[in-house]
Each structure stands twice: as structure tokens, then as C-alpha cells.
Length: 108
Length: 111
Image (tube, rainbow over all chains, first blue to last red; front, side):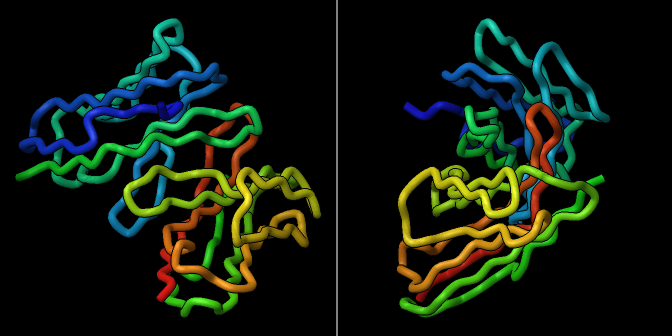
């Protein structure tokens, strides 16, 4: 069993829809990251969470430490949101342990 | 803020040839640096990490090595590439409990 599981693996949405991507992890963590990977491969950090909820523009990330679960929400989705979204948690060496990613495609 | 420069962006190399990928960091000193690899259909996995000059730790045995000759330079190398070395290689910089910063990545195809 992978230490970080994401669902769904693939997601297609119509422009304007509300989107939720889920992440469950099986290890104790100090922080959880949500990352966005563009088609060319470049990765940018969206959020780093250790508790509660964070919001940035149309993106919202939540984490439940007791349930070892986090969600990334996108409100009023747009085609430019199309990307791979990756959940990652901190490992014992300070490294990141990554989920396999969720490929999001938003259709106009 | 921190910036990570990683090159080249794409690389096609024959089996048995050497490899050198370079990563440099700006905007911070004594960073923790990481090399990750993403094979086809899999998530990113840790290859090497370094907490200082000359200090390299490897997560899994493989056909690759890493070096940190300077504080803000991290190099991934191979003496002889294998087909299985193909993948997406990513350099990252992150301190404990801080944001993570990433290079642009290198897509390596071994033919």
C-alpha cells in the first residue's frame, strides 16, 4: 500500500464546476503539500498545511490530522486549471513522499 | 524567495553513455537539497538528499550517484545509463516545515 493515496487518478470537468481532489496518507506527518505540475513537467507549490484550512484565490485546501486526510478544492474551475495535482507529505528525512497525482482536465 | 535552476530540460542519451544533471539554488544558504525521479506511471520518488556540502544520502541503490561540491549546487550523475534510467528528474529545495521549491525538471530518455 502506498503511503500517500490520491483520488481520483483522472478527472474531467466542465468549466465552472466545483472540483475536489482527495489525499489519504498512512504515515505520521509534520506537513502536507499540494503541488501543481504543468504539462511541461514544472512543479509549483500551492499549499503547505499542518492543520485546518488554507485558501488562495479559487483554491482551498483542508486537512484532518486525526483522519489522515486532505482535500484540495477548486471553485469555478477554468481550463487553465488543467494540470496534474499532487499531494505530498514530509518523510522522516525531511523529504517529500508523493502521491501519484490527479490529472485534471477542465473543458470549456 | 528561493529559485532553483535545473538543466537541461530535456535530454536524449544512448544506453551506456554518462549523465550529468546540474541544479543550483539562489536566494538561500545551506539548503536541504533533493533529487527525485518520476518513472512512467508512477509518483515522484526520492533518489538522493543532501543537508550540506559533501553530505549525500541515498534512499535506494541504483545506477546513479549525486554530489554536492558547493553549498548551492547539487549534481546527479551516472557513469553508464540504462534504459530503466529514463524518466523525469526533479531537483528540490525544502527545509523542514517550510514551502518546497522545485527546478523545472529534466525529462531524460535513454535510447
